[in-house]
Length: 386
Image 1 (cartoon, helix red, strand yellow):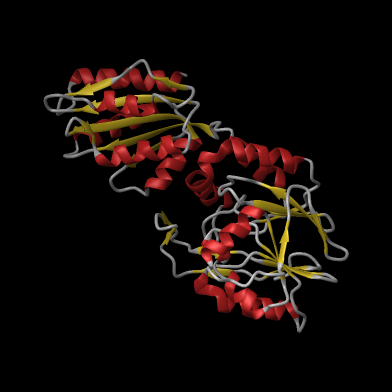
Image 2 (tube, one colour):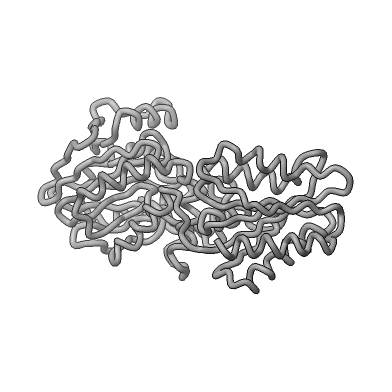
């Protein structure tokens, strides 16, 4: 696939995968992107997952049309992008490997005994590589989302090769809105590192970018302000839109009934968006993404062994580990004799920044009482009115 006159897409679609990184559901597969720049010198941008090495090499050979490769630029060492490095080195023994010092250490760890002598081109922040008409500038992006990550700017075509930045779940041949799967990808995988993403966005702002070539998902060519704006929102932990996510964990159904009652009251009171997740059955990472998308969150859990129900514990852990902050949170608990879920949930969130807890707090003793309904009416008014 032609990206520009001199840049070709040589990546692959993975329709075999069901869980990315062993945990994220990917019903529409994944794309492992790689690119080749055809200039006086030829540079390949990253490799692909080990299950698709041969397909990738065929794509590369077709793009080369009899030429050879001068450089392999390694931006990120996660195996979905780096697993084919050894095979590449064996097939193109004269090619140089361009990477930073952390990356070279990881290459040797992933591929013990790999022959790199005389092939290493170490780069650091601001270094350049001349290919002919194209000059590549390397920008370090540590912890976005591994410590060795760097991105690459091609001044000739004004292209940013963005590593995992601006990526998304889904193969390239699937038809779906970019933001939905990009959000779930970002929050799940990069979400903890908002400060580092902000630092990279500041560096990128100094570049004249016409196109973004990520390592997952489509090449972004139009309306780049939209994509960059979403990344700014996500990485600064601002809510993307007004809305309430009601996340519940229930044993016999009474907590579910309470969550559904509250959701209906929120809709009646005009909440612009109400999303309900049964945490034992939903896609957990979609629920996490929705919690970051909306500005308000309701946590409703049964008490379980003086703790919260396991699905709720897992959900809050995912939120906290991704720096959940700047949200309004309401708490609901259920227990037949000693409800403790609110205390546990609040304790799990106590170190999150800028969390405002709703004034109205709900305690259910087994079944929903009339007093509980009145309390939930007041909570719905509080959440709808703020």
